[in-house]
Amino acid sequence: MRQQVERCDLAHDLSVSRLLTGLWQIADMERDGRAVDLEAAATSMGSYVEAGMTTFDMADHYGSAELIAGQFLQNTDTPDQVQVFTKWVPEPGPISRKDVRDAVQRSLDRLQTDRIDLLQFHTWHYADPVWLDALLWLQELRDEGLIRHLGLTNFDTAHLRIALHSGIDIVSNQVCFSLIDQRPKNTMVDLCLEHDVKLLAYGTLAGGFLTERWLDRPEPDPGDPLTYSQMKYRRFIEAAGGWAVFQRLLDVLNDVAQRTGASMANVASRYILDQPAVCGVIVGARLGESEHIEDNLALFQLELDEQSREMIEDALSLMGSIPGDCGDEYRKPPYLTASGDLSDHLDALPKPWEPDPGAAGRTRLSTGTSWETMAGYSRAVRVGNRIVVSGTTSTHRDRLIGGADAAAQMHFVIDKIAGTLQSLDSSLDDVIRTRVYVRNLADWETVARVHGKRFGEIRPSNTLIRADLVGSNYLVEMEAEAVLASSDR
Image (tube, rainbow, N blue to C red; front, side, top):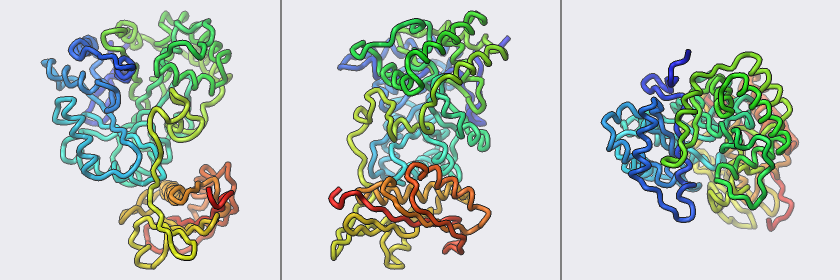
C-alpha cells in the first residue's frame, strides 16, 4: 500500500508533496470585485497541511493568494514543514536588475517570509533576450539566499535547453500536462530526464472537465457561466477533437474508475503522476469553498495496472494533438487561453530594440553587441520592404548563450533574428533566404533540424556551409533576408 501522501525530491534539499495545492482559483473567486476572507482562507490551508499536503503553488497575479499564504505562515507553528512556491510573470518589455529584486521582495513581503522555496519565472516573448537577463539576475538573488531554488513555468523545450546550457540552474518546469494535453511527451520529458529537471503538471483535471460532473453531459453553451479554468480548457477540448471525442475519453476514464474503485479525477491525476520526469501534479482549490481533500488523498491508494493504462492510451490515440510545444498557447496561435487571445494577459509586445532611421531611406538596427560598434555594422538594415540581417551568433551583450550545445546556440540565433525583424515591423514569416555557417561539420544535422523546426512552415531558400567562425566558442552563425508584402506594413 502507498504512503498516505507521496513525496518527491524536487531538489536535494526540497521535498514536496506529489499532490500540490494550486491557488490560481483565488483570482477567479475575486472576479468582478468580490473579496475573499483572507483569515478564513488562510485557516483552510491548515486542513491541507494536516492531511500531509504541505506544498502550495501560487503566483504574483493569483489575486490575494500570496497574502493568504503569508497569513497562514504567520499563524502556523510549523512553517518549516510547508513549501510555498510562487511565480513571477513580468509584463513584456525592458527589465532591470532592480525590477527583478523589487519583484522578489514584493513576493517575500506578501508571503511574510525571508526566502521563497521555489521562484518560477514566466516570459511572454523569447525574441526579446531580456528573459535571459531576468533569469541571470534571479540566479544572483538565489545565491544571496532570497530564493532557495529557481524554476520555470510554461517554457518550451528549446528555451529550457537554452537556459540550462547557458549555466542557469533550473530545477523544475511547470507545464500543462493532462489526458487532453500530452505535449510534454514529445521532447520535454527527454530533456528533463537528461538534465534532472522535474516537471510540475497543472491542468491535470482540465478545470474539472475530467471528472464525473461532465460525463454524458452536453457541451456547455457559449453563454453558460464557466470559471476562467473551464473557459481555457474548453478550448483545449476543441483543439483535441471536440466534445464527442472528449466524451469517449470520459467513458474510458469512468470504466477505469469503476474497475479500480477510484474517482475519475484520481485516475486522470494518477496517469500523469506516473509519467517520467513528473514530480507532482497541481490540483486547484477554492479555499473555504470546495476542497476535496479526502478524494485527493485517495490518489495515493491508486495504482493503474497494465490493462487500465492500455485502455487510457487507446482512448488517447483517438484524440487530436494539442499543437506545438509546452507553453505555446501563450505565445502563438491558436491561443488556448480563457479569452482565446492574449487580451486578458497583456496589451502588446514591445519591440526588443528601437530602430534608427538613417539616411537615404535606410532604417538601421543595433542589438548592442560590442562587435557592431567595433566593426561598424548594423544588426540589420531595412530599405523599403527589404530587410537584410547580418551574420548573427549566440551573443547577448557580452555573454555566450547556449554554452557548447549547437542546438541551444542555433535556437538563440533564430530568436535574435526574430527579435531583430520584429523591431523592424517584420517577422520570421517574411524571411525568404537564410545562410547558416557551422564550425564543426558534425553539427550540421543538429543545426539543420533546429532550422527545420523553426522554419518548417516558412520554407525560405537556404544554404548551410562549414566555416571557421570568429570566436572560438561559437558553433553556428546565421544571416537572413526578409521581404515584406508591403513597404508600409
